[in-house]
Amino acid sequence: MAGNVRPVDVEIIAFDVFGTLVDWHSSITAALAEVGARTGIDADWPAVASAWRARYRPTLGRVVAGDLPFQSLDDLHRMMLDEIAADGPLQALGGADADELVRAWHRLTPWPDTVPGLTKLRERHILTPLSNGGMGLLTRLARAAGLPFDCILSAELAGTYKPDPRVYRLVPRYLDVPPDRVLMVACHPDDLEAAAREGLRTGYIPRPREWGPDGTAPPPPDHVDVAADDLLSLAALI
Amino acid sequence: MAGNVRPVDVEIIAFDVFGTLVDWHSSITAALAEVGARTGIDADWPAVASAWRARYRPTLGRVVAGDLPFQSLDDLHRMMLDEIAADGPLQALGGADADELVRAWHRLTPWPDTVPGLTKLRERHILTPLSNGGMGLLTRLARAAGLPFDCILSAELAGTYKPDPRVYRLVPRYLDVPPDRVLMVACHPDDLEAAAREGLRTGYIPRPREWGPDGTAPPPPDHVDVAADDLLSLAALI
Image (cartoon, rainbow over all chains, first blue to last red; front, side, top):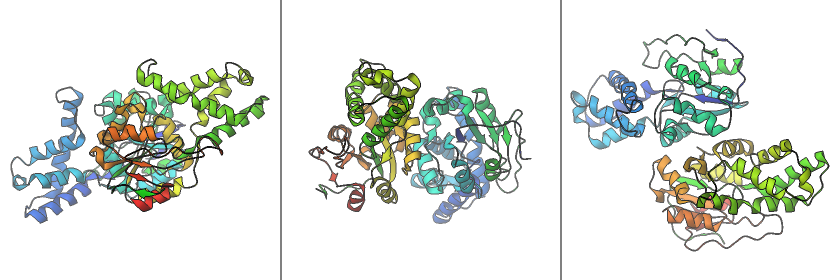
């Protein structure tokens, strides 16, 4: 699938994080299973991880739509966890356990190509996340996972969440470049479509295992500038 | 002079940059001399570098006081350069040369202890700049100088400049810690005093050569939490 649709000459590469750079599903499944083992709760942990994450888009969408006031992703992760724990085996979860699980989103395992791919891309580009994770979350996640970013840009700086256009504008605004000198890289077509509407260039990477081993990746969006099988392939293309 | 006044147990270390981590005087002197040699302008370049920087505090002070609208440090550096070039040999400086000199503030040489000191401190702490340089300036400066920060926090995110208290509040706000879990490190007593007023812990490093080889360092401010001869000494103390 790899290939350049058109030449990409950018100074900055901005990355989606959850799913694109890190494997939240297996990391959160492991964190849930660990808390479950300690507290004597048994559940289908991969399914719980998916159910927790399934609330992410609708919940953040409520913030973007103005139905919920802006609040940190940590607080929203806690709210979503409380919702899925309202009945079933997770009712036995204590507040400290829930807080620990919220912090598990600060320590997610990178995909095998992530660190070598970023390291290669960083030789000639400035790298930043552009994620709905908060500044503190992204800083700790990058440190724990060894992601070699040059700075951290979070939707928190715009007081809203992707795909609100104000989030994409953070990159040209704070890194002093025209939008077309930025490549947004993500595994989610809607993220790339929103970035393209703000004039950013777009790069698609499939992450078929984002939701677990039996998943499939969506096709790249129309009009993507570059698509590659992983970050090392992307580095070879641009 | 090194010594702990009181124990310091922090998660985050925030650094002043110009003077504290990098030697702006020799870097800007060299950049001026290079442009001078190319354009046939001769001047006392160390004195020009000092004159340029001498306008920094009063100019930023006008922004903090509300006499000037907030604008990027790059734009203010250009304004200050135009002011000192209004008469004398720098009148011959062209606009492109002035822009190049403004960008010289994006590539400043670290002090000899800076990179090894930050590397040691980063083993157990999250490191961020907290500087009046803009997000783009700091990101490019950190990259060029090899400063191993975990994120970039700039006064630009507060829309004002140090010592406005809103700048110091960026660190607890965006890194999700109480103010007393942050150590502010600087060679400028007024920076540390302003940080302490917002509840941050403070660390003083003398940089007697900040303004050139014949300078002296001010004494550390009263009530500083830790003072050390350089960043490696600081790393040994905390």
